[in-house]
Length: 210
Length: 231
Image 1: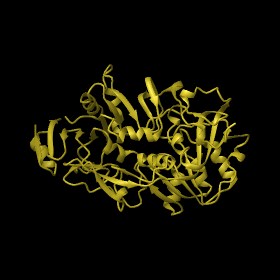
Image 2: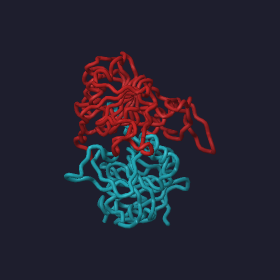
Image 3: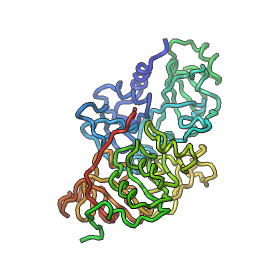
Image 4: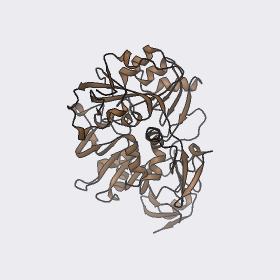
């Protein structure tokens, strides 16, 4: 069976080493936070200026001055710290974050990422911190469904959407497979409810298997 | 006494902003948005403004109200499109406002550079993307970098938590965001705070923005909003 978003979030969480500093992108990757094991010492970074971010705030906890990158009210954990935007992105760009998990429209077998614009006419361009995150963290994971609503593979030989970063993604976590990408091409690490042959038939890039 | 002036009213605080100014506006969504100063700027009447801010307004308050009043010619930001950015969206689709999209970290660092006297800097963000097209590049340590120039403001509008009479500032949680950066990057930095305390009443070790960056301070009743439809 293909994985649900929550099951996939648990798989991503499983692969984040204890003690890592981690940034979770807005949307689907946010769910990874719900599956990080207690006591792992993983510290969440939010680009709007905080380390050791806690879960979403509810009721009386809601403070409009304390939000995540998606502008959702959140909480602080003991040992949290606040800093301004230039410091927050220096942390990212300076290679201090261990892992960043982002969503994507397309990822190429060599690790190019397209996740900020479909280039559609009339669309209002908006990039936020995606380009800074893509080139900053030591490891960039992408979390997405492998196929779009029309059944087309989002893992491609070359991205057709405008790029966010070149050669920046190290691994994609999808509902049907976990695949390493990079200079050596695509390497399937794990599949869910699909055989390697079926996968190879539906994905337009050569797949190797571990 | 310091150079920082503590003013009684918002109208005094925003006096003198000229048509055509570049205005740096603090805030990430609604957090840290200087609502009182923007209302004052709308009353003051300056127009044809270039606004530099992370977003392009939420709902119809703060930056969105300034846009709606027709005072802004151009927005330089990282993320205009949000769940409640309909004021900007309509102006943009009607061709009534210019937009320059800048990656968020570059936006912050370009203003930091302006405040720090840096002429330009090489940065790996955006290499190979449409946002770096036409920009000078250089390979440093085997990695391609893009040359980025500072963004300097005529005016910065900042919301902070508390100031002392020297203009030293402390912030509250993630409402800090761009405040300390833009405070350094404008000719005139104007700050609204919830409270002004005597010099000596802020812990010098905890000051986030030293008063040297702050020209005018005004106390306002701080308004706070959450972003509708955020997820």
